[in-house]
Image 1 (cartoon, rainbow, N blue to C red):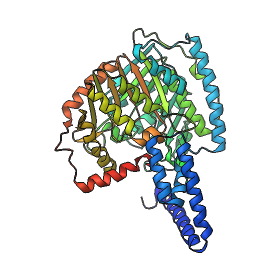
Image 2 (spheres, rainbow, N blue to C red):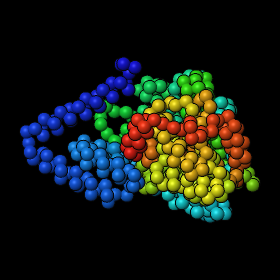
Image 3 (spheres, rainbow, N blue to C red):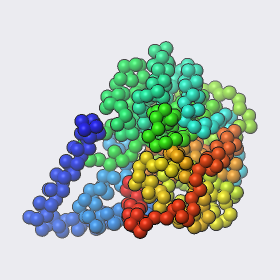
Image 4 (cartoon, rainbow, N blue to C red):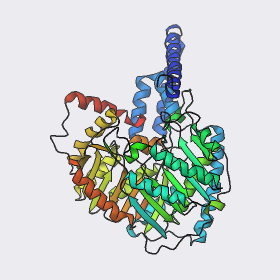
Length: 504
């Protein structure tokens, strides 16, 4: 750890920061004009924040930072308040967007050019289609996996069937039993002429594999890339990570879920007790959106554009009466100009009539989400949320627990997953609509990361999700007034941290 890449880069960034502090402090002692300049800059930044399209709570936090620590606040705002793609990446993404839009529109028109009927939920499909350019689909089989272990077994089986191409995009990859088994299949498939691409997040995997791990994969014939390589430079791009988990096989079969490719996700190691994760398999037309979502991120990382049609022109098996699926993605500007995942969640919360079940590893929602959950409970909806009992990050765990009471006071039921960590990010509403994906109920997922999920309407996966939720509630520990008590110092500390949560 002392001489690893993460430590070296972190020390170089700290050195840059201290150098900047020294320069500002020393210069301020000798030049009065610098003080006046700082005031002018702070006022200009304040006006920019006020007039910018941004979450209200984020605005208040940035205003506090900029006004309380003018110079450092200004620097932090410039670097970390939004995604900072390079000019070349912006040009590439613009090209990618128009290529994928034209290609998807072609296939969408060829299949009828009309979204399937989802009754009262059709507006949600229209919203996702307009924001992500990813339509909803019928003719798609779904299968839900309640644990990382069952997902892993199915993943291996489906990878063995690949004949044309395999696309995989994950936040974390780590050598061990889970990844080594998958890698062996990928190596064999690449040697047999199957096109294999693998994209992993550099910071997500930085303590797991070497900095040049992608080159090791490339020598096996795998077209591997790392997303947003971690450089020893203070830059906001480090704040926007690829948190998606997607697998696409021959454009017909796909997986989305919470599990990464490391042994803790299948309970081969147990750093936080029992690890519970989930995933969903799609087989059919809905996989087309997963193919596009992967290629967009891969091409942005590679800074290329390519022909998508050859990966999308696929014959799908007929799957009548399978419900409707709509994969969707989220990410910071310029990827999306709205909080897509948050609004998908809000639409579901606000449409709930009977029950609303949620699993999330972190519970740090903003005011709009809190209000939607409180309102749902007050109108008689059975709202239940499951969070971990064993934390992977103690600070985040304490902030999560500090949010229990204000939800419970309105009738929301909170459960903690006993003896372990629940990493599944699932929502189920009224046996009708469900979401499985990578999106946590916290600011990092909803504002900073590149995320993905699958919105489902009356699919075969929903009854399996309901069964899994019921078992999880029975295994969990329901929180009450006594269990959520915090002493005044912890409440004060968590309250201060919550103010700055939008920055984290």
